Length: 198
Image (cartoon, rainbow, N blue to C red; front, side, top):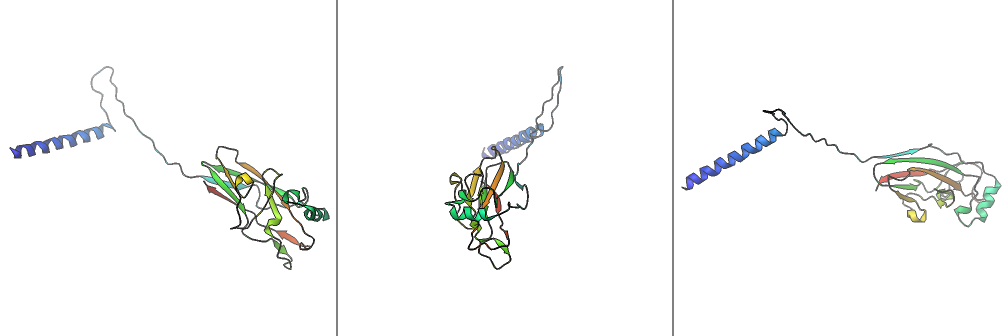
């Protein structure tokens, strides 16, 4: 008796496997028999994986700051903050275009702690002598890599935005000039923009 039961179980299992195979086959083919009307209906599922996309474009790789006179030095000497540095001398701007399919963070800093100066007799102009702003009103001195990063609410060096908001940013620069350290010469500082998925 137990042998018969075992045989029945095997037969049922084989029957179930046959039914599954028939169902799987029915997903890619069908027959319309009889009619009219004869109808044969199949479905096809399309699938794809969207990648993580980030694109940062600068309007230029370099920014020539406007001409500097003694007025810029005087404004720095009297300034209480970067907001008070001269508004038309030693200034410039750049446009950033961000394209992303997700939220993102933009870090603004410099890979160096000082400006590059020619002649090299002066190497101590601090990177913080250039400040940046998104509204051309509130300016934040640049920091070197590893420096203190402020949050966006404080107009600091880390900006967080949704991908659905306007992704074109105008960054304005102002600079500080000091009688006792900034000798005649050519000055350059690197401003680094790093876009990261958030």
